[in-house]
Image (cartoon, rainbow, N blue to C red; front, side):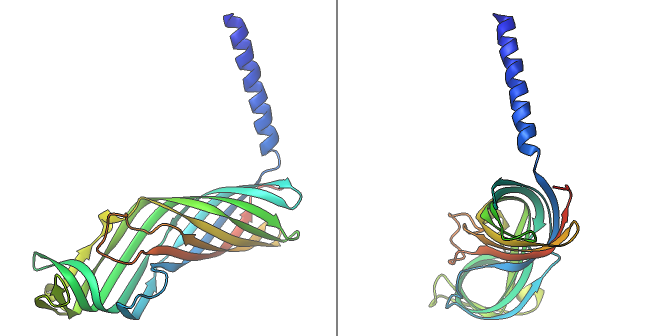
Length: 252
């Protein structure tokens, strides 16, 4: 009986190995390197944010390895793995903006009118799963979901050149200056989610031998903060476009 079971297991392993070899036979391997351009923001500018004074991107690099396989004619599938960062600095003018902060060692909460400076840092591993469609020999369209796991996350900044009404718009007024000692500082990093999910759509264009160009739009479906976090009233979504270069590793 034991020999019979071992024979069945051995035959099963051979069958699975044969199926895996057959499936992977025509898989196209590609490497991508690109730049993420976008930001973490609400959908639509809320009334409490009066103007965007400055916006700065960092070296938002993305490096990806993916495999593609044709399934039926022009249709196929893609699975990838990429390392990327999505960083930004933004400075905005706000009015009656709900905030929590620390000033002079004291924790304060209320509505703030003035300038808010925010720094966002996100390093992550992302798994895209996409359907592909070959328009012709050079151009391919892609679309599907993605999931990201954040390896590191920071959301911090300061408020300055304004005033805080403690509690509500009629509460005690506390002035905020521009010097480090007179600013209010905040750090909401611990309230950020570890997982982000979204939808990605893109286009590939092979231009010369194994090289090509690509462009993606990645739209987050869940906010960057946990549901229990209520300090920032608007839901902030990561929305980024990616532009870069493709290198086809396999010859298929």
